[in-house]
Length: 123
Image (cartoon, rainbow, N blue to C red; front, side):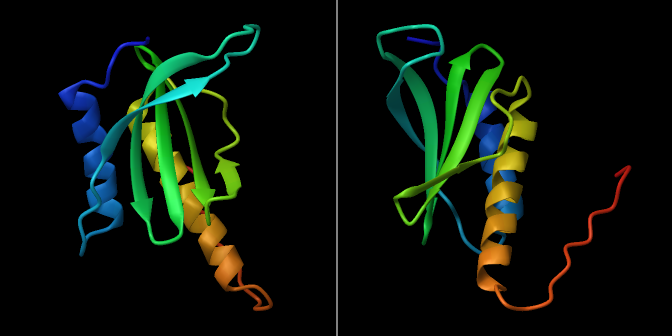
């Protein structure tokens, strides 16, 4: 099994969650997730940080020291990721995961409306 999440890593995740959900507390749970890595035949257990929102379950898997993979499930059956296979920066991994889910929810909830998402560059 890969290295477990450190207290510092869990704090990094929790700080991102606290910035996203300022009026409520999201609790990070630790789990082990079995995945088959590319080029391998057998599944391997990896530590994961998991938290939930009413319609989404977020997962960050620690593949190795400073190697993370993230995705979220919407309504338990639709899996989404950020489009990047792995991250070496946990803050970036968590931030991009939260933004991907927020963008998905925004576009899903505004279907049929003329909505434009303004993204500033260089920030």
